[in-house]
Length: 198
Ligand SMILES: C[S@@+](CC[C@H](N)C(=O)[O-])C[C@H]1O[C@@H](n2cnc3c(N)ncnc32)[C@H](O)[C@@H]1O
Image (cartoon, rainbow, N blue to C red):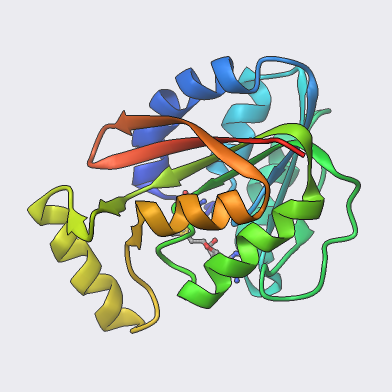
């Protein structure tokens, strides 16, 4: 069976893992939002067996996500859940950790607002959010290639686009989280880490 494959996931999984080892160090439940091909879910669940990794994606993308997770058959990686952040609350008890990669620049800006609103209830007090992807700072792209990537995204969908770091931090603050790390990652990406206060 040919599984859906993302080369960028293969390239970024090791650098992301090095941050998750530190930030998701205690045993607990993880919710992954926008799981994509499942490469991250399978790799991180295998490398971090102290975590229960619950992946999710919009209903239309579950057929992409499910096969790799089913094939892996890991004890800490259940079948993915349907979850569109623009829809009603996910029926899931609050989790210790939330992870999402390369999702905020794909979903429309209004959905990014919903993403953070959900975390008010989905993430436990004291919990940690790790968000990976490209961001703008002070309205400026970090590199020319990110500016070109933003144009390419907007040609595909005018509502997509690289998000402002400051907007994301502000939305997180409104949801009771504070930024604790901004990790520069390979290929002009960042891994932002937030802690939920209440
Ligand atoms: C570029 S892919 C990233 C997938 C994977 N996380 C990765 O790093 O390769 C963007 C993902 O965002 C998801 N997505 C788009 N809109 C969404 C929404 N409203 N709620 C949840 N996920 C959404 C898509 O289904 C897709 O899986």
